[in-house]
Length: 174
Image: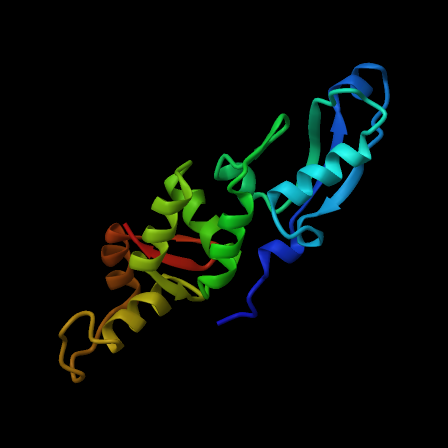
């Protein structure tokens, strides 16, 4: 397994406001989510950053950690209260955030709980190609084939891959 990418440590947002933007200013600041213990603390920091406005309407003009947008937790005008819970679950899962992103690349938009369950039930690991993945399935006794049988791995991989999908080297059962 690769080194885990701690999503909370790398996730950040650039927080400006619509009022400033509409007046020709991109003033804001990059906020690292790991600098705040929870959503409420992050919200307090955003209000302090834009304390020159009576009721700032926050605008998230850029961000790092694209999975947040794919999960519907972050958009230009919204940041979910659940963001810290989700990032913590990703960190505690034992899977790199890259695994979740690879799964979403193939399945499309979905809520985090469904994604989390899918990854836990159907993720096989990272492999260099379909043939290596299919060979792993055979060696792991997923399929019962005697070891004396000679297998054309390329042809077998083409057939087996109808029941699996791959993204960035990460393999999942369809």
